[in-house]
Image (cartoon, rainbow, N blue to C red; front, side, top):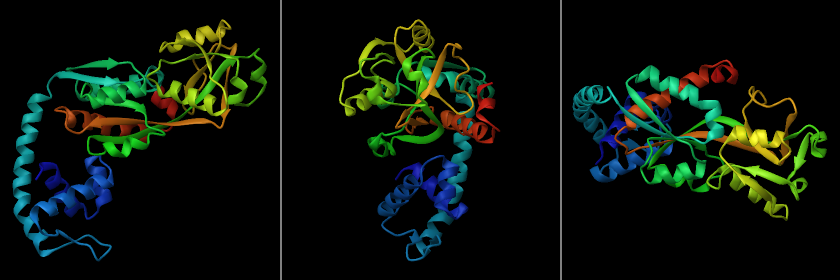
Length: 309
């Protein structure tokens, strides 16, 4: 029997809803459901009636709630005191791809500084795939990654809190004088024979572009692999090749020289940027509170432009 299972049960009872309990604990609904099922298995009795749409406690459920609630309240006070002492200082390790960092780093850093001013932030700049591996190896406290088209993601729901954050799109970056610049949408077959400047091999960006080119019947010509976003842009300006940039509505071309343009692909390379928070890291509660503050800030912002300030 885990403390988390008991905590989820108490919250469901008090909220009267699995959905509300999931939001309060910053996890998905299946996490709550599975935790309660496991708790019932360990107790050997059902805690909720299953034949109605409403959440109704069984007699055993009511008894368990009455007896466990005071213990949970006391434990919460003890844990809060310990955390208050522990959270005075520390090092928070965050994995974030350079392209995503252009949009989110300053906001994440400010959020951390506001909540935990004595903490040091250590940033690992890698691609989304590399950051996922480091999270699996318990090397990071928080990952900010692309979570699109990752079928195995649901298999990690017992290891990570997975929270979508922003929608974006990878667009082709090319000189205005390039023949393809006259098109508003560019197919991947148009890139055959073009020199491409892509992110390193551990990035979702590179993996997806290579796969789309292969689906179109050719292997892309990659002349540079680099996570230096501004260097890639400068290389495009110098006619060394074409590249791809992550865009977010309201902040697409601010950093581009006026000699370059961005064009959507057909089909478009749309992505979801999300947060991965390891559940069993010792800093879970610190990171979760930061993520909650970050999401609240983003969701209450009037536009993405506010996020970029």
